[in-house]
Length: 498
Image (cartoon, rainbow, N blue to C red; front, side):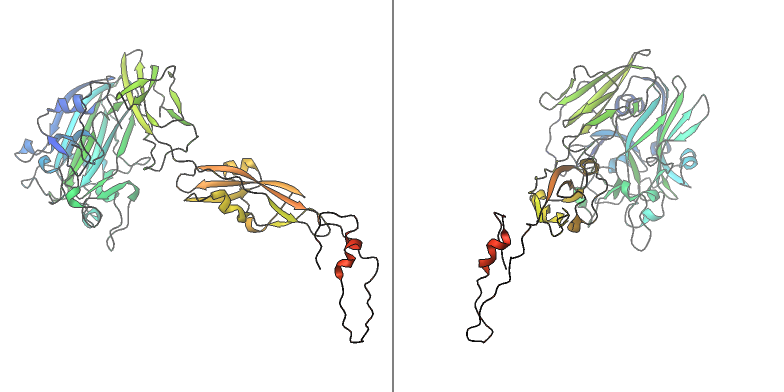
């Protein structure tokens, strides 16, 4: 989620089954300076582009807006291998535009596995960074995602960063933590009978039945990947060229596109991805979340943290929060502005923080057992008999038991046989129950007391119990309770049965 420290035009719409819109009126310089870049910490120049219009064919470069649709980016730049006017949904037509065909791109082929590319669209520009890291956010979509061709056709995207001073070239458009390039064949679910899933966690969705309703799709492409971020280190003061390029592989059929989020080309400042319940990475209620810059930015001299005001719709500064990190305990959208003292430029980034619900464990009743001779204070307990009381109807939770509070807090060393646990401390012992939520690992810890009562020390009767058999049939009525006093001796509050 990006918001700019610029005058904001508020557009209110009802989220429905809308489609994106495209605008081809922007120049290359406007697309880079006014749409993509969100920092004054670079000198940007030498704007160039190439697409089908350079060869008498379709235009594949434009500005786009979400237009109230559910597309993840509100606005940005689209690069496609066909006619950009066909990018908006619904997804009711399979596009293989650029039928005349225009050249592919050798630079793209050099940094990906794509070969024999066609219909390349690209934008390039030069910049001199004043901060030591760059990043940007993107989503790739393609008609090749049709439960067939994603197995074989490597339509691709590359973000090629060239250091003009050192000659070093790198592709930043790779899967997180890898060197795997962004290609259709590298990111897709299983296609039954044709190919296994590859990096499926980065595939978002198909935009056709039976997976989703094609008429509701925001874009007119068969499938799309999740939002990804590309990052790269740069040397302050060196001159770099950036080239963002897409192309079809092997033919001009089944177009593909990449959407670059407006303002996400962030020169030098990157907070972590949003922490949300939907993404499964939200912290738990009551926890502290540390927000900090992902890299050490040399020369950054001042910091100011903000929180998004949902009433005034502006970022309010957080008084006194001027370090390079922030501890968050409440949900909200937090931003940070960093000003580079020497260059006098600034960069801004923000992150959405949600907190997952915290389960509340009920303190259970004590478990009490009677000891047996020789009254050693040991007994076998069924700890799980208190599960329902501890859970108290809360869904998606489970209970584990631990010998110490520290082990329960850390989720370490659970008691392996909680339904047949023999206490390790004679007489009285406290074990600890951990109630954990299954989706986010949020938990609560409560004590469970175990008590072993001594068996009463009864006394052998003084004498046997004799009755005369008057009719000599061997059967008489005995009053066993007549021996109670002898057996109980001095014991009180004890029930005696025979």
